[in-house]
Length: 281
Image (cartoon, rainbow, N blue to C red; front, side, top):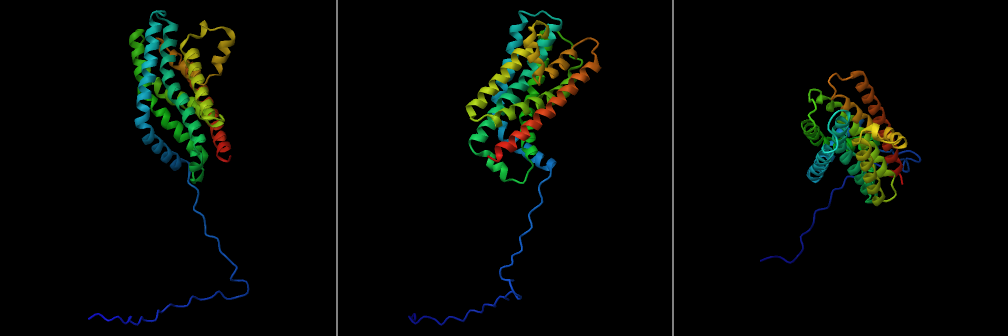
């Protein structure tokens, strides 16, 4: 038979905590040490892997559209251009146009939506340098352009009967042009006050790369030619176009690649400044 009398509980044995001794010791607090700030290269690798895995499925259809667009432009220009310097300019400009579509246009839209949706607050709370966020996203988006740019260059070489001996120049043209265009796209997306305006600026930048990069330079009027010199992808196009020559001028090609690298560093620095400016607001 169960007893209804409550059982006697054993007295709890709680060890008294020692009190701080000394005058004013009760109000004295020792701050906990903060974790060390993450270094640039490990943070860059982490952001790159995260962006690459996030955009892998969503960006592949867009990469197909960019490649199909560039190949279609070369097919249309085949009826106008027979060969020579014009054909080399068309193939080089169409190949770099794939880079512009992804690295400039899509990255401007991404950072514009990230700023509008509060995504920058998430990155601002992480102990990573701002340069790692910008460089990681730019490198991830530029990586998607490699298959499309290589396929476009090979297709254009076959279509216009250009030599493919020196297509290895794409190893330098794609990352340098991608860095320059990705920095520009990130800066446009971060500085635009609304995501719609960031999308518009990205589309205008891609249209400028289309009109000023695919058309031969000697066919453009003077003021338009000056605008072509200001476009970051122009120097990558010039380097790739001169690699189709029978005896390429490697000094001139290296000069154009060096300018493209300098523009890339400058554009990524501006994008990093724009990220810091947008993250603190």
